[in-house]
Image (cartoon, each protein chain N blue to C red):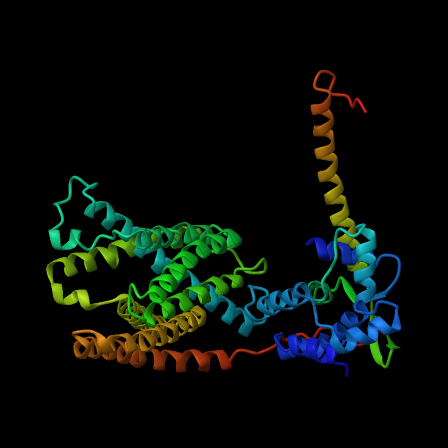
Length: 352
Length: 111
């Protein structure tokens, strides 16, 4: 086996085993054939030192995403994972969209643009951003709202491009601020950035084979989400200063735990068979939230109230674990009951 | 029907072909416009075989490895014919309107 073949077969390992069993050798033959220039010397050199081009690798990655995160016509397990990733992505994007919509409203209120609301206390007004970096950060963050709407309306590439706008400026801001020593070095912004990048990549699950997102419920979820989470939260935080200790990872923990409890209640009470993608999606969110919470815990070390903050964070993590573990066990059991490959085998033998 | 699937079926019209043979034929048919990557080819081929539009013709040894040749089924021929007619009808529609736009008074082609 040439080095080139080894490299190509290594990339093909991204594809599901059942698919590889059927197509791998044929794909390798076709690929090596495509690298055959007709000149024995050049072909021998390519066999040793050549690498699959970026576009060839991209075509394999795209095929792997389509096969592993399948649409409605995919094998049951592939469909369950595909739907789970799509639901988790939508829920995470919805959370972003809800929070930025609220932050737009809060910014307007703080700057006195909403006349019918009472004037903010000076304590709140002081927290309004002043530096150019913070302004860039806030403006970039607003891109999550159009990104979410684009994704729901079926414009995946637009959603990814717009989400990139929300991700890159804060990353640059954080890098510059931490490098120049304007703010202390911390894990939190990078951990959150990593989750956002994962979100950006997960949008690949909305490929052509996936069924379109049901527009009405997901668009309606935006105002409902705003009324259910940030509005009461902001009101409570404005009146009870202690609750301001709830940061973004903490809020994510609370929201995911609440969603899992509601899901488990519905699942147990109705015994609906089509809840597996939701169980898997919430499990994925629970894992991400837990990772985010654990990573951001390290930043509490040098803060004044670090014992209180660490205790609150531990309680949040335990709550996610307490509900998330049983849900994950149920989801994995249900997933194992599904057949891994399609019931009908494709023809692979000559039919003559 | 996606564009790769359409070109793969068209490439198999005259003779059974192996994977790279399809890639080369599609590039030639489209005058280099459609250059199928191996991942895209086998993604489309897997679907076409699954839908019964393409089937395995034979396996031949090539440089110490087996190379599979694929051929169009009757169902594949029918699907390609239907798609070609649909595309031709669409193209006729656009051509007629383009001609009318070029010659708005008579509505008759000036070329």
